[in-house]
Image (cartoon, rainbow, N blue to C red):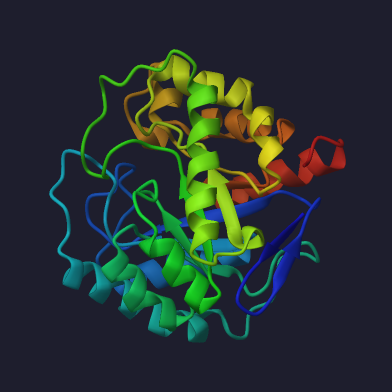
Length: 289
């Protein structure tokens, strides 16, 4: 399996990839966001040094109890980071031979106006939490050569979906990905540029999320790398009765192991250093993807 980027490609099977989370906002659910671009760049640099293969930078929180950021403001925040990032990582070197270097630059955004503005700034991957409601982001990625990460959800971001119930959540996710992959390919996006995210905590309740972890292998049928956003998720807090996201890192490690064991090619994390140790050990004992 190949993941194709604008100027390079990543081949699987290989050690699971680590996506580090950088929030250039002041309302991140885990409390780690910052509007200070210097602080955001320093965090991204430390994640790269710790072993991150992908740096996922976002400027708008997915929290549904916060107002949406204006398009112009989201573009400004992302642009300040992206324009300076190459200089920040220059001169550093990978933690080991397996790390993707330099780390893939991912923009966590869903509005086509923002996607169009940031793609020329070195973005290699669009992490679309909007569920690809139409073909615009796929078309923009096809034109630029960027990759697209399609996340399962329903409805637009920033709208709570606490009442959503699924008779068979995995069947719904499979049907969703079939439809969205068809949409993306129809506008010229190569299948090798598509990644899939089952959308932990998005339009899903506790038992839905646990089912996704248990049955993740069902999504291998698409032949595309699976990204599982494991870090500090609400489902971990529900299982462990931990209301504060920052207290959920031990539970996050359990989710990393479960996801990797069942086929995840990448996990999205806040604590990259701990996750790197985790996947390194999993690789050593033969449980990597």
